[in-house]
Image (cartoon, rainbow, N blue to C red; front, top):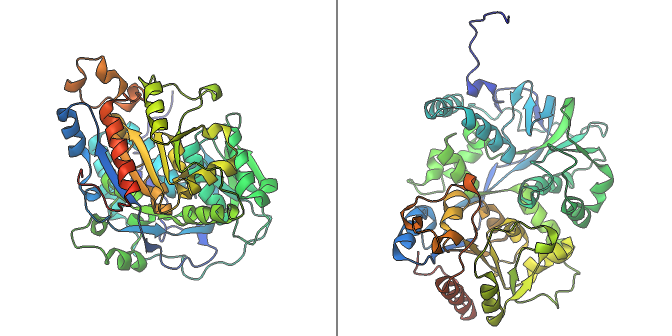
Length: 463
């Protein structure tokens, strides 16, 4: 029998690494101001469900911040190459000196794991504890540590090897930072399973960072490092450290802006994720623009309809009337495109060169990193994706400053389930439902095409 102990498990806040208070995280160079203002994407949301009651619910769920005629403040957050001592990579998490490191999307996963096992009261207590432990000084940032010997490896935290969105939005930006380092150190990419790596992982790395390919090793086993280099993304740093550069940037926003109330709360963390880009994402987009500088754009359609390739095992979400919708879009001048059939360079060139890209909600919108500021990216969503997924692609849109419009149509079951209008939004855990392609949806697309053709730049009155 295990011995009885009166020791309590540590508070969640005590399990987290605190930059500025805990040792073992050293910056290799001074990052300068952690936050810098950037021009945001041009965001629109349009309701196109079949009945006015559902449309009213869609309108109610549009966040007030994104209803404004002028888009709100968006900032670029520093992504810094650091040295971690006594670090461990395991279970899609990174610990430093036995404490979980909150860095970028990896830090969000740590919060998500805790939320799955904690009650609402315990989560509220955890947020209060983290906020109360905010470090008073950004120790370790000013005056970097200089170059690290090349025998010290560089580690990358990757959620998995099969989801294109997470790979492009979270993994590749780390490589963009690493590519600028004067180092020949091996690069260890940590993920849950090496067996699940898809071909696009190797393809996009080869296309954008061929100079790194020979240094990269994929690792799915628990690994401890006495010393390792890593890219530290500052999203969670904003509420963990009292940094004067953050306070100065926040001071530029209106007095009632959510930027004035940074916190570890889920609402504040979600707000920051939607209102920032990582420096690595910005660098990645710049590297792709340079890569495409000599690529011919002659065969790129002005209007592209991105479809899932059924021949490549794409998920079938039982879309109704999809053939009718596809033909209707062809009549509007859209050319069907299957990204899976294109090389990485051709995929990026498509998004950089097309004037309009139309697609159902999905990972294809991770490509918005590479769009032109004049590109109109139109996502077809549903009340389900609005409630559970809207905002996932805002960072991708903000990087390119493109026009990003989401049109919300009914889910596929709306036409056959008499209880649909009485239902709450279907939970994402019940499965990602398909789109019900309707005349109202087509009318909304036609309106955006007409607006682009007339040169309209501002948000529509539908907000």
